[in-house]
Length: 80
Image (tube, rainbow, N blue to C red):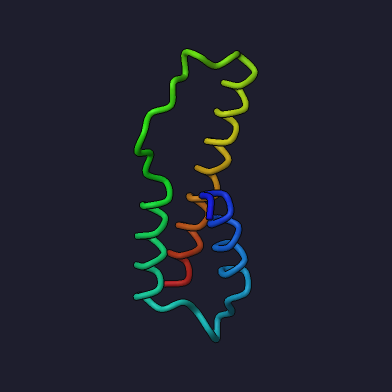
């Protein structure tokens, strides 16, 4: 599962949870651990070999992922 797929899965999970059936603290901690693992960049990518367009696309993707992560964290905090 890619980081983007995980974020979509998590978004769906959180959207389908209700106030009557919130995620548990254990689930919230597990989600936070998985998010940390998913978004940890292990190998640096060679930016200098990218064209300007490729660099813009990569920056947009990274910003999208950051927004998804921040939203997931906000929703997790709101539920807990």
